[in-house]
Image (cartoon, rainbow, N blue to C red):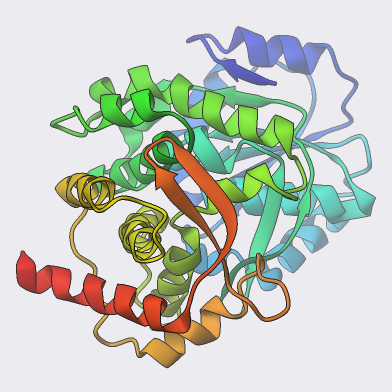
Length: 349
């Protein structure tokens, strides 16, 4: 269940009072510790003891080493199977915190309180937990629903602009794959700010919830949520491996531009729709310079994408704005053409 919190967090307190938890562990990074944890603690009413677990911020922390440290801390603090983990943060915290909770002692309860736009609209919803493995995004994880998701939109006021823009990419994706009206409303936003974005959050949540309810374990429809992520994840991983990490939404924006063009090359998407999608995404996102990455390096990551079968790269591609199809395999030459197309966009600009 997803609940929008009021200013006194009464819904969260009702949840805590209605359960029999033994102890609470609150997982944060240094940013949410500074900006969001005081708000949570100032409104959380419970007689239970609690501990703060803090990690460094950043995608590079989303790995098995960090998870192992958290497992060890939980063990040292004698967390039992009635303990509760509160994941207070963005996608890294909700992904990894959910994974820690779903595996520790074969599973303890957790809730998500997302603090970024990306986490509110996408990452914290749907029961996917996970961590990165080597250069591969979200390669290890579980399908485990949190007990609850509590969303406090005012946390968005703590975000730098780049983080807000990063989350907006997932909102655009939701419109492109399933809700043309949502897409058209979003691209009317001239200035990306909290006030302009908040009214559209619920529409994105609705798309994500609908898809997950239809296909929790990603056997069919849920694969459409991967639009923009096949190429996007590969590019994100290469930047991370280079020691120059980019935000997830920046990679997804690049991936959606590329995969919209790929859908056109495959004959699925009209040239007009492909152009409209690309031009509108370019309004919000700067060009990513991928000139340092060879096609072979990108393909090495694409071929190991977790959605693939039989060494065939599976894409989720648009057939028109608001409609997405899954399990499309694309010719090697068309993927090369798409990467070449993206690299040339900077010349056009």
